[in-house]
Length: 328
Length: 274
Image 1 (cartoon, helix red, strand yellow):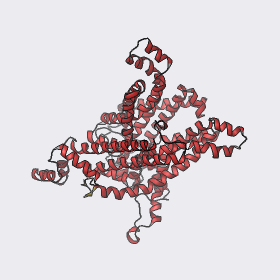
Image 2 (cartoon, chains in turn blue, green):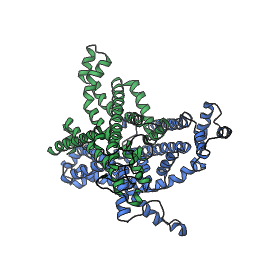
Image 3 (cartoon, one colour):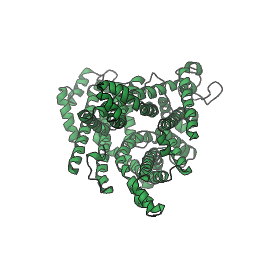
Image 4 (cartoon, helix red, strand yellow):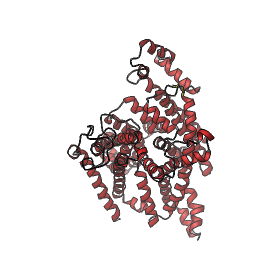
């Protein structure tokens, strides 16, 4: 049953990746206008036809479409994700380099958001209806309604521009030219982006945890525990918390997609050199091969997060031999 | 709880003010939003109450005109998204079986593709104006809405009154339109408000990333100009802050309205939430 479930999930993931590859392919090939001509017009004012032809031959754009599709698909699987025209480097190399920097801010922000979301959400749900709960809830609704780019911009203006506590952007200071990259310096630069992403994401985990806690608090086994005469703290720790945390695991995958979106805005505002800012720059110069690669890597990230959630779930909840009914 | 009722009317009022501003933009804005109206980067004064940008365009006029784009993006996108989600959800939940299975598996696959990067790619592909952007957002958002409506319809489809109507010989189309749809409408309404809020924020985000319609004034492009052309380094708050503040207020109002509306139609939630 479990093996079948995982197999099916892998199949969906493969299908999703296949669709991403297909969309990426279609983007370049069915786009109105000729991409090569447009690109060359940035270099020459009028692209000479023989050079356009030469480019088309080099990139295989003169072959039948179906042949191009299969060769692109095969290439993607073999790690050939195309060639970025604006970076003059293979797409996968550019993405690999930027992915590291994105993970530097996304991972701490996600972990922090999950921990804080669980703790505060659990407290809020347990004390439902109390003044603190209402204040927290309204605060989170408020925070959630603020667009991420606006939040990032305000945090940048306040903490970096007016208070001068943190650098205005980038990932290292000028001193890195002489002394090399100093981890402390990087952390100083990463603090505001991480904080912004954390704020952006904590509202989601809080809300989920609070709802889950509300459900759990009404369960019979909680009433039983109370009837046994256990004190509130023990009930909360031993009975409510662990059960209420279960839905959080499945939210990891969702969180990942949200973080990708958030990082595009946050990195652009803070000039943090990760995938998000790469996306912004690729959009700006319409570097289509790079954008294709970004769509593929984003899809892969979500797939990895999905698989991770699937693998973690039975560890957290031994009852579940993850089956069909579990989450549909 | 009286607080909810108050916030219901206040937030509704704020949304109405935005709509009015959008409607009467030509009368409210003192300048043409594209015209050169004075000296560039001028701080606020009597003529330009929010100063001017680097192209010497009046920021207040652009702000007023930008309301239109925001509301179109939000409400048109939400209308499409909700229509698609409701239709898909009702069909999937009512027929069940193979139809449901096919739709759900299709969604399983689509949900794995992160929607915002996909939206960016599609936006480039269709080189959209503002209406196309709304359609694209609505389409991608609608896919996510299907599940929520479906889960409601699943229980409705086996409810006594539906089974009874079926026994009387009513057709599927009739039952879906006359008996299922009215029962999910309140949920659809809530979804519409939250979708509108979401799409306004996302649509302006697209403008900020340079994917806006250059022929239209939108707050996202205003923020982009301000951040990319030196607004932060020079600390020109009247250039940086107004468009973002405008969308934040609107987003807050819609969120509050959504929650208050949800409470009204579902009194059980009040107990849950409070």
